[in-house]
Amino acid sequence: MSRPVAIRLVQVCKRYPGADDLAVDHLDLEIPAGEIVALVGPSGCGKTTTLKMINRLIEPTSGTIEIHGRPAGDQPVHELRRGIGYVIQQTGLFPHKTVAGNIATVPRLLGWDKARTRQRVEELVDLVGLDRGLLGRYPGALSGGQQQRVGVARALAADPPILLMDEPYSAVDPIVRARLQDELLDLQRRVQKTIVLVTHDVDEALKLGDRVVILNVGGRLEQAAPPAEILAQPASPFVADFLGEERGLKRLALLRVRDITPGTGPVADVGDAADAARALMAEHRVDWYGVRDGEHLLGWKWGTDLDGTVGADDVQPFRAVVTPDSTLRSALDGIVGSLTNVAVVVDDVGRYRGMLRIDEISEGVRE
Amino acid sequence: MVANGPDSFVWWSWVADHTDDIRARTIEHLQLTGSSVAIGFVIAMAMALVSLRWRRTYAPLAAIAGGLYSIPSLALFGFLVPLTGLGFRTAQIALVSYTLLILLRNIVSGIDGVPAAVIEAADGMGYEPWRRFLAVDLRLATPTIIGGLRVATVTVIGLVTVAALVGSGGYGTFIEDGLSRARGFSTPIVVGGSLSIVMAVAFDIAFALLQRAVTPWARRGAAP
Image (cartoon, rainbow over all chains, first blue to last red; front, side):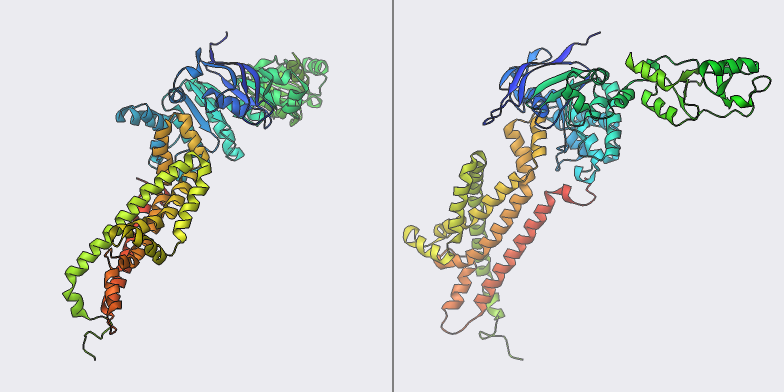
């Protein structure tokens, strides 16, 4: 299922006056509607220039940019910009306007009446998770995280289909940044905007982007693909190098437990004969066995304690329990921290679904 | 205790006899100050707009304003009288020229001081250029511009006193009167001098309050 293209760049070049080299070099890019596309690369790769050419804060030297099929240069620049939300690094909030006044900026430019503007402002503070009591405050009285939320609310005020974000989280500390990133993903599930996000942080790009566009110095496109694909098959040594250490672990963070098939594990039912349990341990080459009662896995026991039939008494709980929604990275983390070297997979209501071993994870990742 | 009379530092019955005079000189002083600062502001704003539009013009324009500012006031009055004669107009020309440097610098630095991120955000949200200049640039520069008006006004109030030499009226007339008497008669000098100081302080306070009033966001715990 391919989505319609919201923004299309065709052979776009930018050369700054007085510069010998291109800042953006014959860039072709299609940005599908309703997706988050993260532009990432080292400094001098033209990612911010590319972003600013979309709302014409910077005019391309050559090439065309289409917004919803219409050339960006076709309409007056201020009208184009009022239809594109814009969020920047230091938020750029108006210090002389209250939170409400800041959020109301574009509705006022568009000439909305007061009642409609007011209602929209209240909707937006709720949407981005701000307290309505902050509406009368000035930006200077807010924390960095609150300012960033106001910046997002302001950008979304006139409900533009497109949102441009220029290093939106680089000015806040890592804890706030992680929370704002999660909020953006949550917000995106509700508003379904076309979001173009510029970052120098490859982990942020991999976390937020439905697609990640990696640019090299001089504005050359290295690779544009979904994060898992980029991690699995970097298109060039540059991309592999840029993704940095722990590429495998980063990939595991993008894959879910439901993406791979768990093993059945050395699991015996309560009341099974001891020999059946011993056969399971031999088959799985382990010296412990899991104890299941109906659909629930109760825990595990050492094989040396096996006597008579499998009983439910004195079982030890499994350290690592994951659900189909868990990332493979957290499953792996659980596995290495447990005595049994497995992660137990249970569904949302706690029913046993299987066990993951390290080799099953690495096999699943290779597929 | 010595009775209050012409030899006293301030002879109160002279003051009582001259209340109409004091009122007239006050109006003259205010008119000359107000008109000079207003004309100076218009000229300085025009110079600032040119400087902001064509950055290279700022240094020469500031140099001209600085040159005018550095001329001693007495010398400037003396230079102007042969050209424009005695009176209000001559004083005004000199006073306007003194306001230009302060006002030009404050307007330009106020607008330059608007954070780049705020400008970029305003452009990115679709302000037309003129609308952004009025609603964002000029609005955020307003406290600095008022600061310039404050210094210019207080300076001009003092200079108007000197301008009485060219026959422009104001509190300086009292001082001139006192100095011209053969025998030391200090009352008009004290009255003219102290009223000038009172007016300067009053305007200084008024502008400080205005500066505060136009920057509600700078107050602690700011709420509407």
